[in-house]
Image 1 (cartoon, one colour):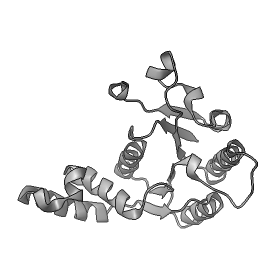
Image 2 (tube, one colour; image 1 turned 45 degrees about the vertical axis):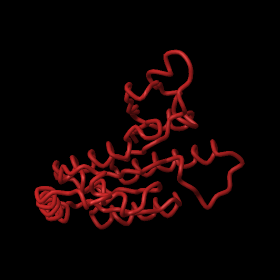
Image 3 (cartoon, helix red, strand yellow; image 1 turned 135 degrees about the horizontal axis):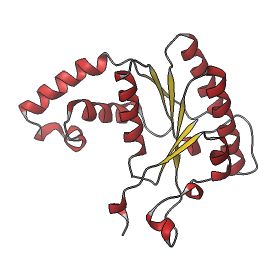
Image 4 (cartoon, rainbow, N blue to C red; image 1 turned 180 degrees about the vertical axis):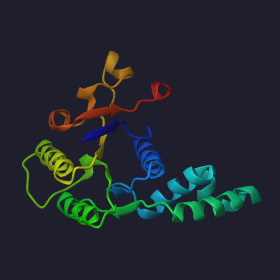
Length: 196
């Protein structure tokens, strides 16, 4: 279980998508779960990444050039061949079952979950911290049961004071106790230029 942590709007989803595409290049079949974005939003990001066309121009295509359209056409062919499966769901119990089915079919060599704090469960919890703890434990167990890497994206707290304001630390993970304990590795994504 590896955690990708970042503050809002830093680019953790883009980083995860780029990682999933890199997995395809290595001959793997990623399974990408999104609890945050719709299929059209993920599609736009994939098109932008595969084509090199600016994502903002994809939203308003009236300013696109003939070269942009050619790049998109080429990207569509390339993207259609990517063995990446997607699932848009927030319920962790449903996600875990679907991941097992994907693995049984041979379509899940690595699992990406975007992002942990948004996931819900059929179980009831007295506090959000306990819900995140349960989901973290379940993702860790899934990684061990299926013998695959599980990449869980996580939100970081807003910047604090002192050094933490400039560089996030493990304790910057929202509801960090269980995530720190369960993770085999934590990657904190940070853009210093966003600090005022």
